[in-house]
Amino acid sequence: MTVEEALKILREYSCTQIKIPSSEAEKQQLQQGVILITKLSEWENLGVCADNSSQGFAVLKSYLKAMGYEANFDSASISTSNDSVYIKYNTQKRSYLIDSYVGEYRGVLISCQSEDDRVMGTYGHLPLDLFA
Image (tube, rainbow, N blue to C red; front, top):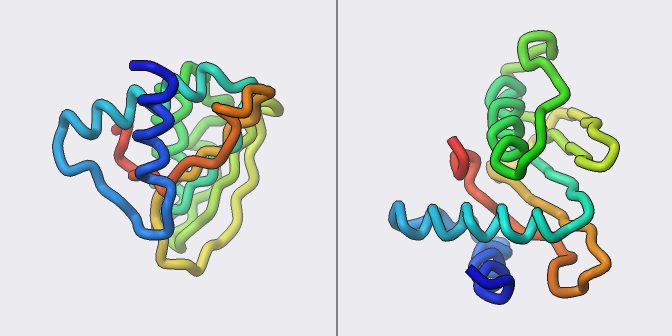
């Protein structure tokens, strides 16, 4: 997959309407696009909107693993909430913030930080289960 192909796929998911891959092949292309573009960026911020903290951290962990990072948090030690949450994770600082979230959206945003203007940008709304 080329950078241009990856960016084209990611831009299809960068809109106000949530788009779900319609096939396993489309899901795999989206996965490849995310991995390629994040490998080319210097660092990323991930924003996860989930039904609860357990789901949110599981999703975050799956994205980080797919992107080649180790999760530096232990999901078992994080206080759980049954209310919807927003988790922001910074791969450069390897730190996160968690807050309550009242919106309806569920999914992941990835903001790539790069000196390469082709790669720099925010991508998503990506599915929670993309790397599950």
